[in-house]
Length: 561
Image 1: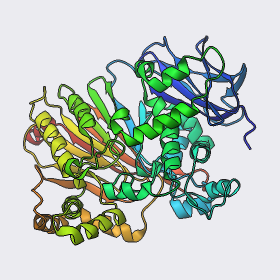
Image 2 (image 1 turned 90 degrees about the vertical axis):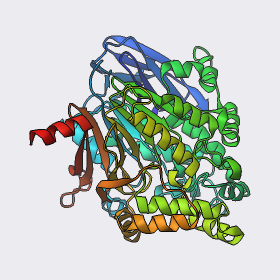
Image 3 (image 1 turned 135 degrees about the vertical axis):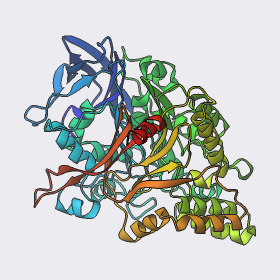
């Protein structure tokens, strides 16, 4: 039972040069105050299904400053907690002209950090990172951490989550061990974000988030057949309603800038009552969630941020799909138009964060493109049934399995790289997760921007060894020509360009970091390592690193040699 006035948070969310957004969940209806540098900012909580939340908008800060802060609930300081053993939380505003430094990853299960949890799920790389940062080590502090999907697992629950479910309903009745409603989602987020080390990290490191399938359910929106089947489940409407409503509260709200919040219809309802009685958004959020599920164009989850000479575009590759057979697309027309408008040159680096890898290992890309063609009827009705069963059993529903969308985005990328959409960037880099192994691939080009895929997955949820072997096999060169032949058998066109792996794969739990440096993009991956029996204090170990130099820099180095 929660007895502390502060249930979750504070989470440091959107931060720019002069403002910060700090999110909390409180036990009761309350007023929440953030204090820093002799100033106070206050917010009223809003309620959702018996839970209470506040987003405190801190403004008027100086660019490039690092300022300790405290949080009070109804006038009583609740953060930082005395005796917790972590440094004071800070608000670090962006400094104009400072090159971006970013951490990212995906797929994190929430199980205990003891010997048993580490044995079943490996060491939590986010927690190892938090302990390293708290120790004041040499690891450089990033400007942002981007969580690229599966922040919570609603369909594959831990023993701790199952105990909570058993205490409130018959766990043998549908949906069983999976989540049923908002109350269960709220507890799942509590399990995910309440570990002291991770909680401290999230209180001081700005974060950006986007969902993937397990935030709702495995294979979410894989195909029209999947969607029709799931709609027949008696519990599905409650699940999707709770999943999207809780995602808006716990993840999406903090992605929004103050300007974006000001025009968000849900936030307007909350903000209209922040000076009076606590507003209850339960009915509005439930209605909103069902509408967003039925009509993807009713709400946009994607967003875009510019950090000096680097643009970060975060793409919703799950909820914005069109699953009609004659218009099948990973991004519907409205979402594709939004992305097209933001895929521009004129930046030194263009980062596209999409939970699903845009460039899979080529063998797997060909397999998924073949399966899409077969599932959509290339080999007749029987073949379509086989293809659909394979698609759902093997999770063959990435960008490669939506060939129309893949080719449209590939066309945008090629235009940017060739300078047809403004000055060509040094690099165009897709940041992704989902597949539970990490790797770096590059499109084979001799001019223009370098086009890179950099995957970091999982943060904490390793693949079984058999599936590791499959992932490794799909990454090697022999898989590409075999896969291409299979794809041609279903009359799938050749990809508009070709790519190959330049690093990996590796299968550790990882958190990746990216830094803009004079020579290009520096990337590295790190994992937690336990020494002896001390499972609660893992150390951080570098697994892999690579520097993606601009083409002109690489040519200058070659000439110098």
